[in-house]
Length: 293
Length: 313
Image 1 (cartoon, chains in turn orange, red):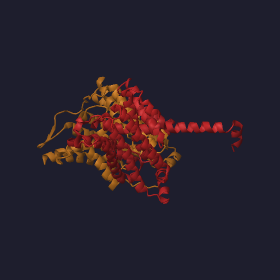
Image 2: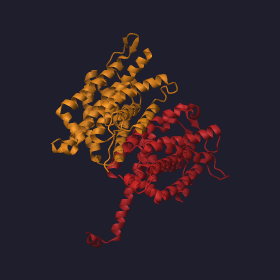
Image 3: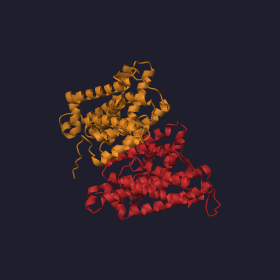
Image 4: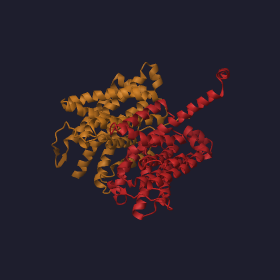
C-alpha cells in the first residue's frame, strides 16, 4: 500500500511535468493549428540557458525568472520569423519546419554545450519528506507545486486579463477579432512565447531528475504527446489532467507490470497514443474535429 | 551504364558510399510514395528500415538463411507491418499521423533492445559481407554495389509504372482531395493502407540491403534521427518526384560527410537550416525546381520573344 501511494505521488510529480509540456503543445495548437514538434527541444535549450546563468553565479530563482523571460521572447521571435511565413501552408510544410527547428536546436545545444550529461540543481532540499511511513522526494513535491502554480497563473491570465481575453478571441475567431482591433498575428506570437515559457519551466523541473543533455527531452516529449492526445488537443485543462494520468500510469505500469519495467516505457506511450487516436481521436475532453466540405 | 563502368574505377570506400546512396534512394522512394504522392506524413520510416535490417540480420544470424532470400523476405515482412500500421493510420489525418509515426520512431530503439534474445540487445548483430556468386571476379564491395544498383533500377521502374497508371492516379487523387477521390469511387481506406504497406516494403528492402552491406546492425543507428534523415532526403530531393529520391540520397550521404569536418553537431545544424530554407524557397525540392527551370527555358526557346508577347492575352 505504501509503495502504491508513493508511486502515485511520484507519478503525479512527473505527470505534472508532462502535463505542462502538453499544455504548451495545446496552447500552440489552439493558437496556430501547429503541433510543435520542437517543443521539447525548445524546453531543453531554455534549460541549458538556465544552466549557463546559474554557472555565471546567479542565485537559482533569479536565473529561473531570467530564463522564463528569455524563453518567452525566444518563443515569440520563433513564431514571427519561422512560423508566420508558412501559416497558411499545408500541414506537411509546417511539420517539416518544426522538425527543422527541432534539429537545429538539438544540434546547437550539442555544439555549444557538448553531448556530455550535466547535473542540474534542484531548488528544493534533497532530504525526503516523511508522512507517516511514506517518504516523498522533496523535488517531486516541489516540482508538482511549481507546475500547479504555473497552471494557476495561466488560468488567471487567460480568464481575467484583457490580453488573455484577446488571445482567446484571436485563437477562436481570427477574422472577427481582427475587426475588433485585436492584432491577431501578435496574439499568436504571444501564444508561442507563453508556450516556450511553460516549456522552460517543465525543462528546469525535469532536468534535476534526468540530467541535462541535448536529447533529454525526446522521451518527455513523447509522453507530453500522449498526455495531450489523451486529454484532447483542443482542451488545455484536458492536457494537464492527461499529463497527470499518463504520469501515474507510467509509474504504476513500470512498477507492477513485470515485463515492461523501465525498458519499454516509450513503447507504453506509443501504445497509449495509438489506442487513444483509434478509439477516441478527440481525447477525453476535446471537441471532435468538424470538417466543412 | 555509367554507374556500371564507374564501378571499376572507384576505390572500395567510394564504392561503399555509392552503395549507400542506392540504398537510401530506395528508402526515400518508399517514403516519397507515401508522403509525397499519397500525402500521408510519416516521421517514423526509420522503424521500417529497422524492421527490414533486423529481419535480414536475424535470419542470417540465427537460421543461417542465405542473404539473397532474406532481402525479399524483409520486404514482405515490412509490407505486412506497414499495412497493419496503415489501418489505424487511415483514421488519422495530417498532424495526428505525424504524431503517431513520430512516437513510433522514438520507441524503436527501446523495442529492439528489449528483444535481446534475437536482436543481440545494444551490442547488435555482426554479419559477414557476402562474396560475389557464380564465380564472378568481383570484390564483395563491387558485388554489393551492383546488387544494390540492380534492385534500385527494378524498384524504380516498378514505382514509375505504378504511379503512372490507374493506381497512381488514385494515390495522388487521395492526396489532393480525399473526398473527391472517394466520390469518384476510389476505395480510400484500402488504397491508403496499401500505399502504407508498399512504402514500408520499399524502405524495408533498403534496410535489408543496408544490413548486408554494412554487415552490422545495432539499435542506436535506428533512432528518431534516422527517420528525420529520410524526411530531409525527400524534402531536399523533391516531394512527389521519383528522380528526387536519388538527389535526396546523394544529399544525405555526402553533405554530412563534408559538414562533419566543422563539428560533430554541424551536419544536423546544416540539415535543419536546409529543411527550413527549402520549405520557404524550393518547396518542390531540387528535382521540382530543375523541372520548373527546364520547362521555363524550353518555352522561351520554343517561342520567339515577339510571338510570346503577342500571345499574351
